[in-house]
Figure 1 (cartoon, rainbow, N blue to C red):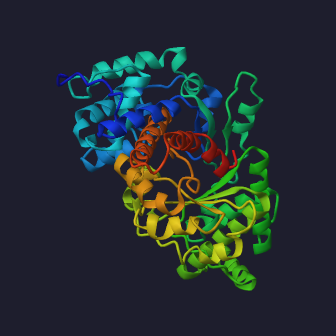
Figure 2 (cartoon, rainbow, N blue to C red):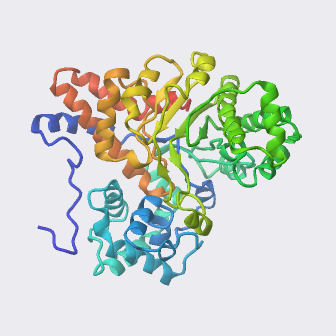
Figure 3 (cartoon, rainbow, N blue to C red):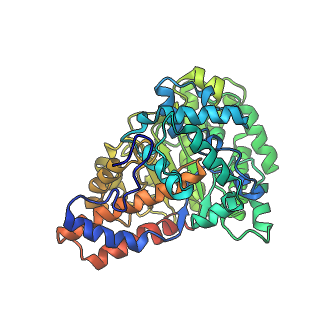
Length: 473
């Protein structure tokens, strides 16, 4: 039995089915995919991390502060985000140690969560730490991880190779010159593939503070006058081409809803003028944003970039937190999603266009079987995005497969996306997905609904061929 300070070893059959017959099949399927390379077509790792290849500074700065999955649960348990170093930049050793202690002293809040699963996998499989986090072990664990981070084999590039990452997509502002990506590509010592992703939300939503200034920056980056609506469209088209020329294969959109009603050209021009002057009403700003979602689909049909849509989240739900710490610190909360009518205008125009790929993600699992899978079961352009954010958890992933497979099988789903800023969690997240898919497929084999040879082919495709095809990698 493990002691209060010694963690149990990671069980080799973790997340596999408890039924002995299914587990035996799942083991064989998992072994087929366990060591395959990682394709990460949607994430938020900073490319400068790999460009400069500097040693990670401390355990908290690597494993805690950038991971809002970790910090939000601690915040809910009464730990201030400032105590975790959120928004503070580089931490002193004392501040980093205190932040790490908060994780260890509040370890119980992670019980039963995927965050616990990822962190344990990182600690054991990457750093060789077998202590159970607690007040008694916090400093010893901190020192052990810090020692490893000082070793050359724990620098970012070395870990990139160790994690077997074949493709890593970042998320980038349309005005970015993508200098870090270009420098990586030009570095003869770098053999990896890191590609940008076009994320235009702030330029499509006139309701956002500072939108006129953002549009001017867009025009400057595109060397195009955005003083009128037609120039604005040309600027977006130019920046999309720039991204594609620098390796991007997709665009990412994260609006609160998926509605896509187009405006008449004259009305779009009128609202655009009003928005630039700061006179657009909230209703007009929303109508323009929905219109621009359809415009993004039109542009995708022209330039071939995959369109990914992450909808149904109320960003920065707590204004005081957003004002103090900025976005992406865990204060984003899901809202109910509607897709059938919302996407109909967009899909009526572009849903059967050759080469158009639309990957739709939602954190409202009630629409998986009712709306999203049926849409993907008719439109050749639509793919069901795998569980994301609040739903990239073992039980939710199992529910996902049960909800969508009978309608669309496996070939209309996206392949796993880790959607993470926490670099060291990437292999743990992908391994979790591979284990769960092996378990689901094992049940189909045990039910005599699939041959094991077919299940092995599907398991491999979900890791390799499917994300490569869907995201045009």
